[in-house]
Picture 1 (tube, one colour):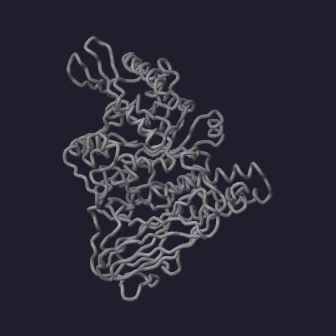
Picture 2 (cartoon, rainbow, N blue to C red; picture 1 turned 60 degrees about the vertical axis):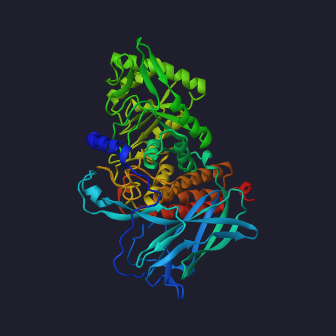
Picture 3 (cartoon, rainbow, N blue to C red; picture 1 turned 120 degrees about the horizontal axis):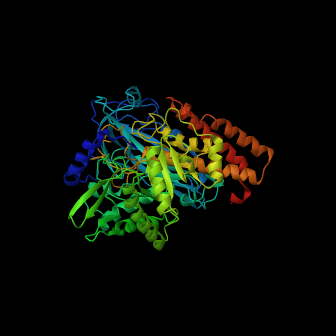
Length: 601
């Protein structure tokens, strides 16, 4: 979802990456610490240890040094959750002197014999070039900004660290509530320790009677585009080798566990015109035989789709194939007679384009039918103008009418209204009438929305306030969208553990997660927003199935809060954290009234 002004730079950079990038399993960037600092008086110090700590919140990216506004550790953390939900908290520790062997001891929340583990991840820092205001003031085009800052985003997998004198170390706490556990109050203590001291953080978790289904059953249509090539390049393993798939599996399972509903496939070389760090080779080999006939090798395509379907657990996910209308309008194939690779430049709507794609589409639908994948597959487009889309859709209808289309669009038009799956971009002038959304849903069509390098807010950049990521899911629920699309899940830059910048895109635009199957603050908050969407959907269904005056009042109060999740309100600074908190409170209040007896085990 980018423009082609960075094409040459991106292509050359990607080529160098194939031969020069080295894997870095441990983050190689650490913020410098100048002088010794202490936290606010709210922090708590264990006698004799020098280790200090306080309770923060998940809405704040805490600075690597300097005083912080934290609640006392002894006051503890209070959470509430549905069964089947993931909830998070954030704490921060610091010390006046360097302390060795910082670790978080295993913690368990208990209620009688029932126990729930608490996962802890150190938040690590990565560099980012611009702030949201700079990005907005520059008109959404990155220039040579000097404001390179560390951003706490990486949820690290390291179990022990050295805490440098004067450094702050945020710690992200995660609780995955089992779907079959009894409702009630659970309690435990998180212990953060060094070799010379410790800080105790009590946790109280109230589990409500309502239950979220498993992520694969969520209705929210999450479409984060995958780029498996980046994983092979970063870790220096052969593309599509057993080692590659072994590295992909936990990363893609993390995506599936957030409710992902699509598998991203490239039909040929570089469908997006070399706009990211790595080349995107085609998953299908197009070959013109010496006798003039054509052959198509689907072996890599089949491996990828089978892996995502069977091993990752996305057997019902749609297979989105990019694209019949690439940015460059060039299509690569191998010509046996010439013994050379050819980049054919073909324009939709011409006889040459129709013949080229017609041959392939007939063979492709035959292959998809043989694999049982035809109904799951969509030919996918990315922000293509109607005059090009019209020619492609004509060819598709002529040669493969059984194949439906998915398309990210700049704005709705008469042409795109008939597309099976569309995703308009959130930007100035954004509007999608509620009655049209309802009509599309009634017709069985999918309508999501997307963000990319625009808008400056709300978004999921490394510098974005974390609440903006959760706001997106609530915006979908409030406005009748089926879900959310973003162009990149793991299109890593050279070393994202050092910097998230890439050419002119805002920092962090290219990916949500980090090498070594490391999650991020913004990915976890995006997942929170998806859970919010599912909760709102279920509350509405339950209230409709067994209506009562008190349930209608609870829903009315929730709807009143959701009215603030509108465009262009979401483009304003400083609204997202408060809006999200009010929505979460309203969801919790409605849950106490609406949750059906069948879920109260």
